[in-house]
Length: 482
Image (cartoon, rainbow, N blue to C red; front, side, top):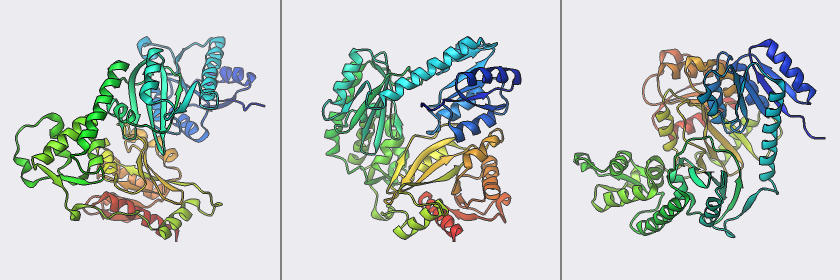
């Protein structure tokens, strides 16, 4: 017998909820109810409904914020959300990925729309299984050839590429690439990187495109340009150090005049020692342009390989015994499993600060970036994997007062927190995490413990280096367990 579908009704109008829930239960759906946006977020995260009907009249968290939060959380990004309301702005309604239902409801229209969405979900689920419409090995069909076929047939959907632990995505609309994501980068930069992958698997799922357009080339032009970039990069690599080698600007480089925008960005990044791969990930331009700028700076002596003294010590951030202790802290006496996942919260008012913090961890063994932090600062951005199946995910929660209803549901299960700055909102959330959730809190950066946090149990004295900060937090978590 098939599992009953779960639908969340988020609506402050009791009469509407009563009529709609009765009709949906008669159709066999399981119904959850939330009268405001904050409660709806909590239910969506904890119960993971198959569909959400979210009314624009919900207080505390509005429809736009609700959608943004769900889309930036890997665990909820695929939940379809149909917005309901009086439809005052038709243009805005057309931008809703899963549609808009105008009030007052026609129950037949509502039931028809819900059935349509579940048919779409069933089709997408079948495509992800053995009956996926297009799936295979890149060894049998190269990515460029596959994209050419999809372009010629004007297909619209998501093409997923898996290469070992790496996963990328190319979004197509009417046969044209409109965006791509691969690790920490997106757009043309990600597409051109993906085109260099020769081994792995692919799967294409037909889905309507509703996201941003970050690639504005036709398929043929994009493929030709991508292959040109790949060929040029192979030639450039002969003049460049390995991706793990750290580079920095020469001392006298600060006296140079105006530079090309890409060169200027690379010079800014190399004001402190960085691995070449880190420079590639942080710079906005495609890899070919960045590597060309790096090669030119090295040739002219404006940049050089950083001395060994500038490089961090290699090896895991925790030794095997410490990993075992941290694993036990996460399990809290529960039966042991092969994969154990913990969560650390990054607290900051600044998207740039969170990005910069993650960039400093790029050389840590096992460090992987899911996606770059968004302005809302709500989501899971990266992880640190250890050899024994232990994984620590790095997420953030906004400290703004209007986000307070989100704190408890999204902080649930956190091991500890790192405060990346000393802003008012940061300190308020940091204090709440230490006092209410009672997790260890580490302050990043130099200076005294702020007045708001003085005397609070679990606050770790400030450190300056992000890697040292992560280790210090893990040590505080392990100490808490003893």
